[in-house]
Image (cartoon, rainbow, N blue to C red; front, top):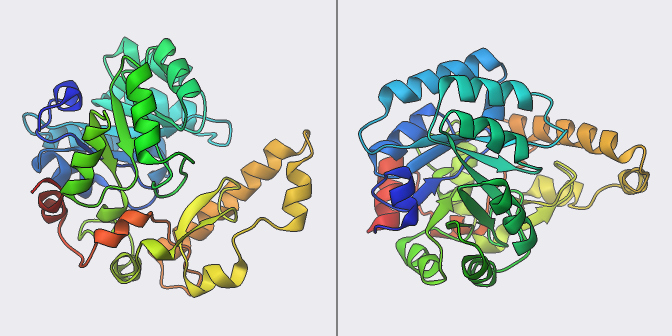
Length: 315
């Protein structure tokens, strides 16, 4: 399965284990590397910069020949830890950074100085060309089948358009739960895929057994979009609690979001509240089950070790 992505990251299979808030951890990424794919963790999964530094050092020490790991950075103003996280990552080193929800210009500038590759989440050709011009090494094409914050284009439409018009590799994100899905994305012109939701139901995932089992019990038809987490539409499992609170922002949030002076602050507060709610649901026994996932959980039929999920994806 040699592609531009396998060459770029020196991995066996063209797969990145997608960074997932609260779910991804060092144990998962180690198993990803041992299984021949790349692993990635959101920097926001670590409360302090010291914890982030420890994780970086542990992954470097465990990295096999041919292994590759990276970290995800939220690069907009809602992430007040961004600059410190970027500095620590550049000091300690990793193979790649994935940027999300903002301009990657500063990340690319700093990462290039220390030889770290930068991949950027995009949802359209306009932003893909912009980050290509800034020096990104690849783009993550986030389609309408992705879990969490997703795009609005189908995997085929987005991947074909970007691969036709961009010179850097395109990594398709969303809608991959088995090998046939990977083959399909590669046929559209992708150099590889980013796979997240199937790994939620892994033994190593840092979430509750209830969350993992939900990814087994629910399917693609149970995924809905909600505005109640971060203020930006996000896919979650349609649990009874989600049905109870609804998926649309409140009337007050809607009014405040239209106020230019208050919009930034409202979004930051909404993001903070939503992330805390998601954290509680993912890590504690609670009836407030806001479980982020994408439709690719359709292919998940049991909780498995990460290495077995990789085997399912490549065989």
